[in-house]
Every structure is written in C-alpha cells, then in structure tokens.
Length: 203
Ligand SMILES: *[C@@H]1O[C@H](CO)[C@@H](O)[C@H](O)[C@H]1NC(C)=O
Ligand SMILES: *[C@@H]1O[C@H](CO)[C@@H](O)[C@H](O)[C@H]1NC(C)=O
Ligand SMILES: *[C@@H]1O[C@H](CO)[C@@H](O)[C@H](O)[C@H]1NC(C)=O
Image 1: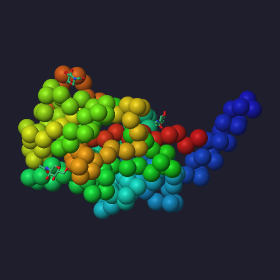
Image 2: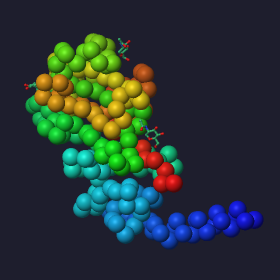
Image 3: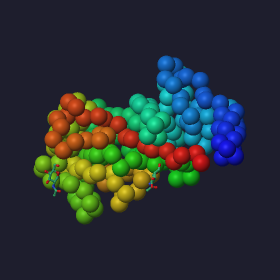
Image 4: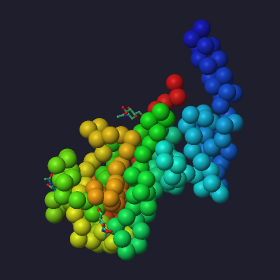
C-alpha cells in the first residue's frame, strides 16, 4: 500500500515536472526527449527546425531524425549525404559523427557502418575490407557512386569500438554510411539506412 502511494507520488511529480513536448510538424516528441527547455527532460535535447526533428552532434551539425521508438529508447538519424561526384561525407571536415559524451545518448550496437575511400594504413583495425564486404554493393548505387573503386570496409558497431563516434578524415576514410539491423543476406533494396542511437533511462 505504502509502495503504491509512493509510486503514484513519483509518477505525478514526474509528469508535472516534465510535460511532454508538442509535436514537431507531424512528428510526436515522446518523453524524455525535449525540443525546448520547458518540456520533456532538457538533458535529452533534440531540435525542431522548421517542422523537422533533428539531432545535434558535438560539432553542432544537425542530423535529421528518421524514427523514434520510446519503448526501446532508440532513435534513428539520417547518415550524412555524400557529395555528388566525390567520396566525401558532408561531415568529413568535422571528422564525422561525434556525440557529446556528457549527454545520455550513444550509438547502438545494431549499426553496420561502411567506410569508403580509406587509405591502406587503416586495414590494421578490426574492419572487413575484403572484396566481399557489403560496402561493395553500396558503391554501385546512387549516392555511393562517387566512392566506386575506392578501398572500402564495413564493421558492426559493437562495444569494441567507441560508442560515441563514427570517424572519417582526409587520409583515413573520407565517407561513410550505416545500415540499422542489417541481416546477413538481405539485398541493398531492403537496407534500412540510418544510424541508430539509444538513450539512457532518465532515472
Ligand atoms: C567480410 O564480410 C563478408 C560479407 O559478410 C563475409 O562474407 C566475409 O567472410 C567477411 N570477411 C572477413 C575476413 O571477415
Ligand atoms: C579519397 O581521399 C583522398 C584523401 O584521403 C582524396 O584526395 C581523394 O580525392 C578522395 N577520393 C574521392 C573519389 O573523393
Ligand atoms: C550505451 O547506452 C546503453 C543504454 O542506453 C548502455 O546499456 C550501454 O552500455 C551504453 N554503451 C556504452 C559503450 O556506453
């Protein structure tokens, strides 16, 4: 009984302390995500820019949010575009995607990251740069065309790699993309392009 009452008090204070944010365009902004300091939990800051929800990296670059799943505490952001006729990610000169480590977000382990136009010296790291790597399929396709014929690699973003960063740089690899929950044999038409992030529970 005492527990039930305490639980209710906690619930009520939580709800009143953190009103859910209004929709951004047509997209719901589930708790604890916050588009404004007066709603949600301000530690879980995302941005509503002209009706489009976006996530901001530590270098202050915005990535469009494609999907949010409050049950699994995950959201998917759009990988940066690759500039036409080159093999440069739009965030190359900022070093790729970097999350603020003081914020409660990290990169989930369900991303298959593909790196393009890599220099040979990165072959030492735990990457699959073989001729059967999935990245070979991407270079045949739309945006990836500028990367055709370059050295490319893929890896599963698991805990052995940093969970706050996907790194690109001139002289390393200059472009990347990512596929969420890629299955071994699925064809490129069914790839779910995105970078999945997860957030820590608020308490
Ligand atoms: C690289 O990835 C491909 C595609 O999944 C796989 O067939 C191959 O065995 C992998 N090679 C290495 C060295 O892990
Ligand atoms: C690949 O990267 C190098 C620098 O590391 C750059 O000079 C070259 O233009 C890049 N290739 C393409 C196709 O963008
Ligand atoms: C990323 O966040 C999840 C919880 O949302 C946590 O379980 C996991 O340990 C974190 N990973 C790292 C490497 O910090």
